[in-house]
Image 1 (cartoon, rainbow, N blue to C red):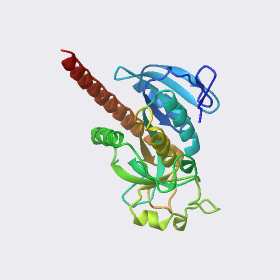
Image 2: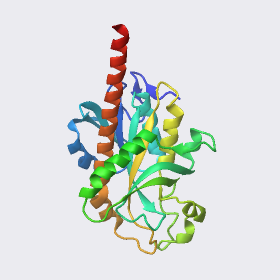
Image 3: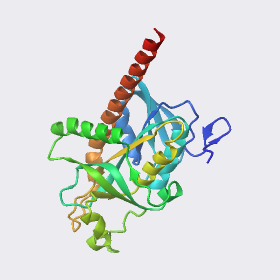
Length: 280
């Protein structure tokens, strides 16, 4: 599918080829934009339209951007597809989830190593049976970042690495009166160790897989904040919780992206050294 119009400008995101670097952090919450910008050097707004908002600056002396996609897997997949078409090859999604396991509590971080494809968008990119898996290097960078950050974080926050369940609906686990209904979660997902439920990782990861063969590997990963724990009879003020825990997942994503940039720089320098050795 052609993702551009005249002048190599993306149809939906609205950015032109060459205006971005290789590195992008995806946000689903517009309020997080102002929280993440202080971590960038000289951020400037690249795009603002009703659906997407992009700022571009520097991370570790490399051009990097943050893109707000809004909620849902289809929006994240559309943004990722067009960003990849503009030369981006490392994308970290920052979002939220709800716990499906007792040890995964509100305020914890979940690094989504893979996603159960319990939605529809991913099947438009890859056939049934193909797994939605995050890039190993991105997952490792997120884990290292979490290890560095959490000893200095307040409270008892922890992080978890594993499988999440991506679905299209937000409130399918809720009864009409607004209370939580544990029976509406898939029991087999919990038994198999699924950590949390969310909406976008499966579609986002499959976009990365679908576009990796050309021209180079697309590296995708995600870090999520648990809005509420597995005690489904309790549904705390999730909006307040979202604001309080947003900074931790943002710091984790930014630190991980810096680690990826530093590793890319080392790989580039090693290639240059080998080429110079052959020339000599």
